[in-house]
Length: 228
Ligand code: TIU
Image (cartoon, rainbow, N blue to C red; front, top):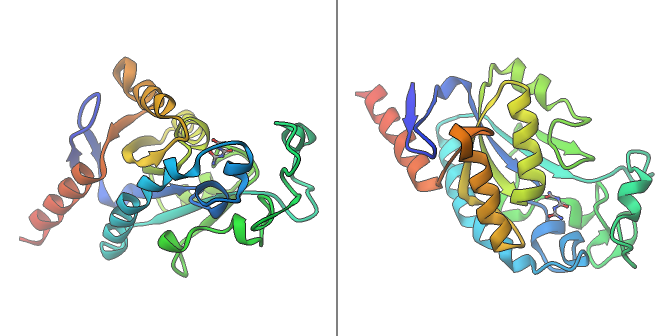
């Protein structure tokens, strides 16, 4: 077992049953002209997550540990888009409309794709999801079970929306989630702080919180021990 310093107490996991989950690191959320900006947000708030996620991703890749990416978005015919979601926000340019990076939040469009800094390698699963949670209307649970995954290292955007929804869904399905505070981002600094507190409060009611450096240090120490 690997022990990672975290709040509210050390997170214990085994490397063979742990995966990295990178949630919705798409142009539509982190680059100007995408869905995030059309919603009125300052997307630069999210960009500090990119470098720490890159370091964690590189570590998982070098160690041959499983990595899952997700993308929020909809089919070009909008058959998986509820009217309630389409109308939300009364946007003049909303989901499915033509925006600066193609049709907003639509599969196959430039804005929908994952940013080049974190682009999936061939063979890394990419879960396309129509909702905020990564489990709703996807086969993520089946894919994790097939690989024997029990623990998720959670990164991505946005902390209080898709990250929180995913952590809650995972929690109710028996997964243990370790959220990396510097690898999850919100458009709202006060939401970021509150959302992270909510996860670790009450004895880790939804999971654990640490940062990328503590995770990498613990995984590296475990690897060194194993190879001695
Ligand atoms: N708007 C917002 O904060 N988030 C989303 O719409 N989706 C995700 O969090 N991925």
